[in-house]
Image 1 (spheres, helix red, strand yellow):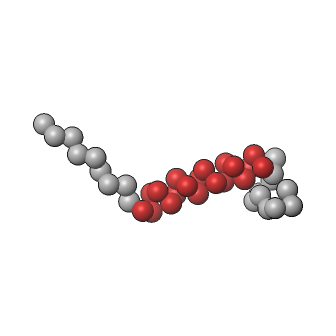
Image 2 (cartoon, rainbow, N blue to C red):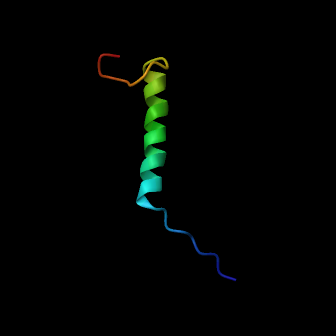
Length: 39
């Protein structure tokens, strides 16, 4: 029995990256919206 690795769709990958970025931004701005350079 062969186990095939499903290719990750680009949309899914982008979604994961966006979520990761959101988490970083929340940490950067203390949980207040988007993180800008002024933070």
